[in-house]
Structure formats: structure tokens, C-alpha cells
Length: 108
Image (cartoon, rainbow, N blue to C red; front, side, top):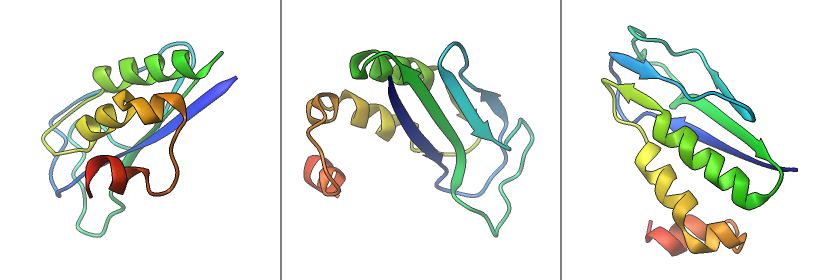
């Protein structure tokens, strides 16, 4: 069994004007956000966590890709596009990464 967890972060304060969260077999979303929710000034930038599980890494990555593509948070900027880049990265797909992965692969 392979599991992958990602954290959706917001970049600015604002109101969530529209929301579509992924679901389905092997997909779990932990969040307190909803349409109309206003991100307060004293907040944690993590607005949701998505966890997928599947038989192997390839299937888990495909499931996470689908979940991220289904996830829509209108009204605020999130890191969803960046998360999609991570799971499409060949080193990530092959499991060839460590704590320096983001800085090496994305020049951050």
C-alpha cells in the first residue's frame, strides 16, 4: 500500500468564493473551509490536506494528480499548480528525492 499526503496552502487572505473538493475511493480531504469562508488575519496557511492511498506509487501519484485537478478553490491563490508540478517531476515519480528536493528541482 502506498500513501501520499499533500497540503494545500493559501498565499493571501480572502474569501473562498467557490469550492470543489476531490473525493472517491482512496481519497481523503481534511479541511474546515467552505464556500463563503473568510481566511482570518491570524491563520494557518494550510487550508486543506489531501491524502490518497493506492496499491503502488504509480497508482497513488495518478490518484493524487486527479484529486488536485478536481480541487478548485476560487477567490484565493493556492499552491495547487505547484503541487501538480511536484507530482509530475520525474525524480518525485521515481522516489529519488530528499529534503533538498524543492530547492534543487525548482530553484527555490
